[in-house]
Amino acid sequence: MWTRTPPAQGVGGGLFYAALVVNLRVLLVPALLVLACAGCSREAGPSGPPVAKYGPSVQDLTVKVTALQADQCQTVPAATVFPECERYATEVVNFGNSVISETAGSKQATAIKAVVDQMQAAVGDYEKRQCGVGTQNPGLNNANPATNGPNAAPCAAALTTVREQVDAIGKLLNQIS
Image 1: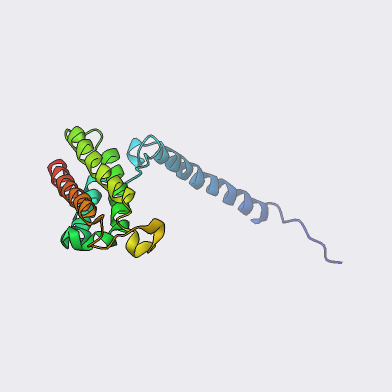
Image 2: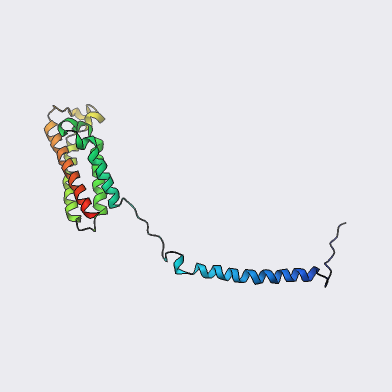
């Protein structure tokens, strides 16, 4: 029923269409060349894949050591607070591992490793004596984390060593950053 009639030749139908295609080609070809050349420029960005950085920086660790130094397990007398410091002990061990890995290539690496090792040994002693189980799991393995119990002096001493090593790590990190 409806049929399409071909455009009239010569009066603008086919010629108009042909002129439009030619004009588009004249505009698109240079535009594509400009875009292709812009993508080849070295100024457009790095030449290799981005390097992923995992873990904290020295600045992040400096902030973390400041937070650890403000914790009650660092500020309240050790003989009073040691039963409440199991979480702190865990944080300190994880912090020490991060410090060692982040500062491995620095001039302070050997000193930091020695301080972290002393700190982790003190945390190991704290955990072996179950110094912090009083607030976490009272009565576990007949532990007596009371501040007047048989483990009071060794637990306070272990926490004191941890505190001293956290302070030492803070000083060493400040020398690096």
